[in-house]
Length: 148
Length: 145
Image (cartoon, rainbow over all chains, first blue to last red; front, side, top):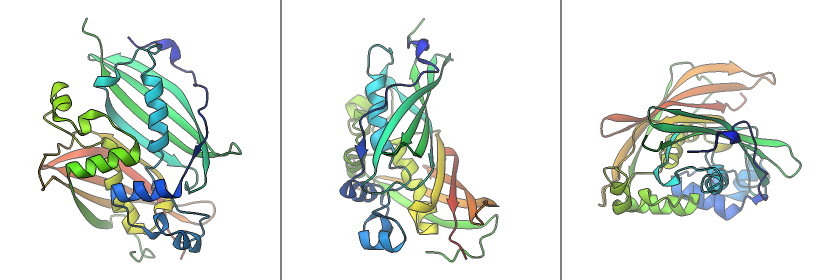
């Protein structure tokens, strides 16, 4: 049974994640995103960006590992092996680009148990090195409740 | 890139079709860092009650997002994007993979304080005749005219 006392809390921010050019290219390739601003630095700069632009769903590459570490922590009591992803949203307050140093803070927004499932709502607030907001992500994660 | 000067509510975006293979799942696992074995091991996938290896929901979401980014031409123009995962995309261990078909439609146009236009796009994703994402909506800033 997950520990409901986590609801309403935020976890300590993680270490800064450096957005790498090659990671953007690798991610864009993996999703078939061919836009030149994701691959060609000169094209990105010509479009007004300081470096390669990350595709919109790129934040999962650094938010999901942080979430996974939390969910695998026995202190929270979550069954990670049977987890499914219910929904996901990503708000980008500005485009993420190569060279960004991003800090993710996980907020445990809600945890309910219904119909034999635990439903967990997590929010990640992503900020740059100066603390300015860059992205906000919301995820609904679902796992089976223990048989009664 | 499409000419976006005359965008209107109801406009349909050019569709995108993708054949997702096991190789694509392996590549996405590495690129995203999501190594959950249900996305590469039939043994583990069937062991947790799935019909077989399934695509990462986030991969399906990312592929669906290409309907929007290929239309607007700039992934940096996307301000928000959200989906609900309703059905898994089962990816067979063959060369054909799973055919997933994406489409999108302009559902709303708004003007922001700085005079730029934001289009709300309703995206659909179908696999095996069924919807695999619901409430898939992206908001994208249109280029200034």
